Image (cartoon, rainbow, N blue to C red; front, side, top):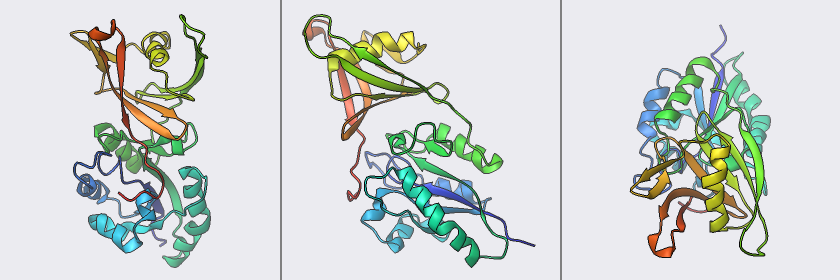
Length: 272
């Protein structure tokens, strides 16, 4: 009888196993070990940038209840998406690991769990994206359980488009903003060449409603903030990425709203 096929999780650390705020490092490791316990065929390959600063023995120590499942780390490819690094590992290693195991063992399917969708191609069908400020949450655990039981992640197709936002009171240049909306998982990703708080305010309050997003904001005594229980809003600029944490109505500034951004980008190779 042939061995059960390999199933792989390409695992990020920051924003997955713990919040990017690092309040409690690896706080979700034990639960991940419990969820995977009935599935001995599932193995782990570390795709996190922690692999740049720590050897495999140290990484196994961080994943201590999952250490025996760890097969290695993805390669570091210059100027490459994380998706490309994962695909390179699969091309170079999947057959070798299968050959070292019992006859008939092969890699059957895989997913990546990561908090930075920008490191993957739009609509990547095997990406389980997490909220960087919480890591694995109830929604992410449900998606993981679906993959463990069915071999597939719930499919989701992004709505994509863009706007040229214009200043109505000055000759300042237009701000081109591209967006991706994931309606089911309620993620809104914005991409802009630079930060213009006035035009982004206009985008978030007028254009999102036109796109059918009607539950993005909560209004509490005229202090607007994202509906955090549902929506994750991120803004990517050249070389930087932010999560939109709040918009507050600044009465002292003539009624203008203030965008509050929280940096969620980490440079590759940065020590935790």
